[in-house]
Image (tube, rainbow over all chains, first blue to last red; front, side, top):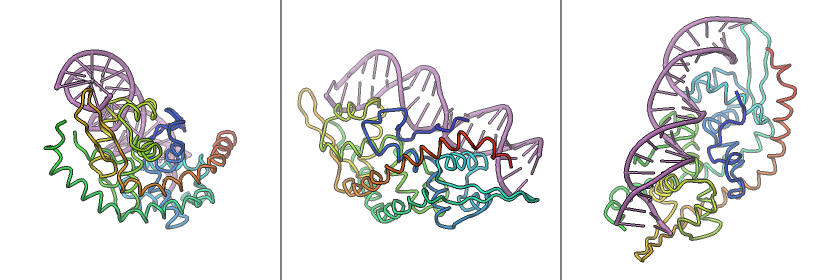
Length: 133
Length: 133
DNA sequence: CGGAATCCCAGAGGATACTG
DNA sequence: CAGTATCCTCTGGGATTCCG
C-alpha cells in the first residue's frame, strides 16, 4: 500500500535532472488520474458510484486506490457522511482545480490528433520500404 | 511490435466518452515519451546516444521502441545517414513542436509541487486517525 | 453504499547479450 | 554507432468475494 508507487515518466525513480516536468506528469497524468480529475472538475462533487459510472470500466479497487493517492496529494477532497447507508462524496480541491488550464490546453491541442492519425497511416503504408538503412 | 501498445489513461481501449483529453494524454504522456519529447525540444536535433545519455537510465531497446512510436505518430523525425559508422539523428517535428506550450504550462504549474509535498506529509501524519469512517 | 482482502496474470520494460 | 534479439522480472490492475 505504498503511496508513491507509479512513475509513468520515471520522475522520482529515474533521472529527475533530465526532464523537469516529469514530476508534474507523474502527478497528473498517471494511469486513471486524468479521467478522475477531469470528471471531478467537470461534474463537481459526486459520490463514489457516480464516478465509477462516468469513468466507465474502472474497477472499485483501482478507483479507490487512485482516489486515495489523489487525496494524499491534496488534489481531491474526500467527505465522509456517517449515515445509513453510508455516503461518501469526492470533490476536487482548489489545488486540483488549478490544473484546469492545463486540461484546457490539452483540449485545445486535441484537434491535432487528426494529423497524428494521418501520420500513422502514412507510416504504416510507406515506411516498411524506406526503413531499410 | 505492435505500435498502439500503451494506454496509461485508457483512451483507445476504455471509455473514450468519459474523458475527451485522454487520447492526447496517451499520446504525449505515456511512459518515456515526455522525457524524449522534452529533450528533443530542448536540445534540438541529436543522435541516438546523445538522447540515451541525456535521458539517463533508459535502455536502448526501450528508447528505440518509443522513438519508433513517436516517429509513427508524426511527433519525431528520424534521419538516417548511410555512413560508416552509421549516423542517425532524431529531431522533433513541427507537430511535436506544437506541444511546447503544453510543456511550458506544466513547467509553470510545477511550483505547486511544494503544496503537494505538504499535503502528502499532512496526510501521512494525521490521516490514519480520522480515516475511520 | 463504499469499500477491503485475495488471487491472479498479461505485458511493459529492464538486463544482457549480439550484429550490420 | 545504432540498433535487434532473448530472456526474465515485476507489478499494475482485473476478477471475485466479503464486510461494516
